[in-house]
Length: 200
Image 1: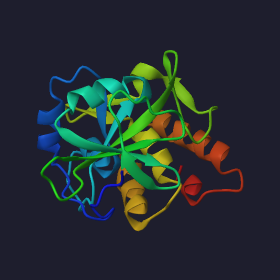
Image 2: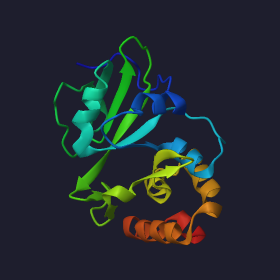
Image 3: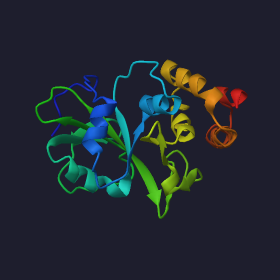
């Protein structure tokens, strides 16, 4: 069953609405994408076309149960949305879940599933890139967010104008350790080179 809402039709939840929705949720979550960048910086500096929220893959069914009043769709590679059936555990290879309230005519948020291996999180870009599970989601501006250097690593793939802007805005505020982690990750992922390396 495919959803009839066009992929580009979004009315994303606000940060406040996300906080309210997941305030008492029985799973870990964190803002991702541009909103995580803005919480790290403590300022709003650009518009957002969607709302990304990171959760751990092994907590996906808790999230599904929590959102029982929502329409949820799994993004099957290479990009087909299909209804996420009740109690269906999405395997590695399916990274995104799109959702909207039943009465809505636009997408409202997207779950991004973080891979886990025991007490570690693992990047889906390379299993060599990993860290302690409880270090992936941190507090910026008192809100849970994906750690900034990890978010920038994911943004480094596309290098859209907004990704370039996010990187340049974050660069002056990145700690030495964050810069070093990002540099090492980019060297691993892009051995042929990456334009951000010269800044790190």
